Every structure is written in structure tokens, then in C-alpha cells.
Length: 256
Image (tube, rainbow, N blue to C red; front, side, top):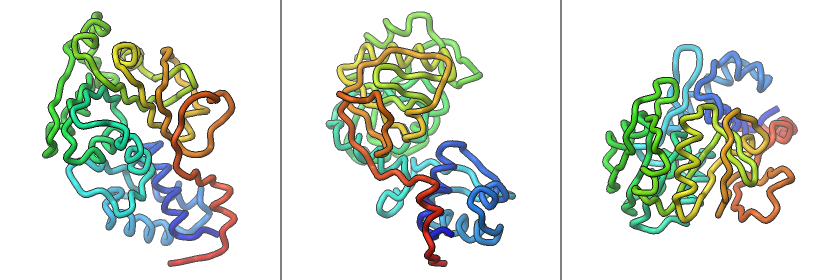
């Protein structure tokens, strides 16, 4: 059985990892009825945490709207920690991920310069009423990943001079980040090499995941959940509580 709050946290976790999900899949994975899942999705949509679709739900980005009360979402909770470490006036390299959007939202009215080669992220940032300057390195658009591709990525990043590289790779080790796209990996390597400090914002699942294109990094801070596998000794970390599926399943209380 599931406490509704814990079940809904788990639904948000799945959406943050998958982007969208069908109600029938949620009901099967959580062992509850379709009606229970519909009740959960309606409640989460009312809080602005997701968008219901025909037969399911999809992830909703926080830019351009108020953050949920208490930062209930995983991306907001992790981003809030990282935002505290970033001073006004910082020059930030950003990957394109929900954690990047959440970080920008958590920065609030603290003006920074945001640097990214992601066209989708640029669209989202430019559409929101934000106090930040936006910079984009040049190149040819890689339509598969949505990033601009440039042979001189390292030189461009040196000129853009980020003070912090904030990365959210799909896979992370203590001294390496891995991406599904070589273009994303190339920019991450250029940014982390040029930046004075590298901050990784990732869920615990990324610490045991794999991706084909790896770049060496030197981490100043890892912001994740408190479910860290061996191999991260010596890395400065800040964490939020991790809720394992088996822990959720042990609950016997209902609140709906």
C-alpha cells in the first residue's frame, strides 16, 4: 500500500526520468487502480507539477510560473541547494535538462549570465520573464540533440568564460560525466575545462547509469539524493532524502 504523498513523489520521480508516462503503466508499477492514479494526477496537476495528457501525464517545467510550495519536486529541491552556492553576477554554463530549468527558477531575481548551446533551452529561457543575460556559442544545429555543433567549442567557451559549469548529465561518476550525444559531451568538456567551478545536479539514478560519450571532469560540488554508490569519496556533496520504491511499498497508511 502507498501513502498518497509518497506515491505522488514517486510519480514525479518517474516523470523527471522519463518525461512522460501512461496512467496504465503507473497503475501497474505502483499496484493501484486506474482511478487512484487519476486522482493522483489531478492533484499533481492542480499543484502545477505536471500536465495531464490523454491516457497519462507529461513533465511540466517550472520556468515562467511559481515554484510548488515546499519545493516538492526533486528537480526543485536539488536546484535550490545549487542556487544557494551561485552568487549574483555569475556566468553559468547550463546543460539542457529539467534541473537546468529548475536552477534558473530557483535563482529568482539574482541576475546571472546564462550560457548554453541548447536551442530548446534558449527558447524556454527567452520566453520567460527573467533578469538574466543569455549567451549562445555559434555553430550548426545538431537536430538529433538540439545543441549547436562547433569544431572550436573549446575556444568559444574560453572566450565566454563561465565562472560555473552546471551540468546534469544522464550518467555521472566521480571524475567523469557521460552523455548520449557526442555534441553534448563536447560542450560539457569545453565548459567544465573553462569554468572555475563545476557543479553537478543529478538524481541518484544517474550515479549508476551508463551513457556512451564520456568526458573527464573535476567536480567542486555534487548535488544529489542520499543514495550515493561507492566511488564518490572525496567529492563534496549535498543531498536530499532518497525514497526507494521498496520503502514506499512498505507503507500501510492511506490519505486519500
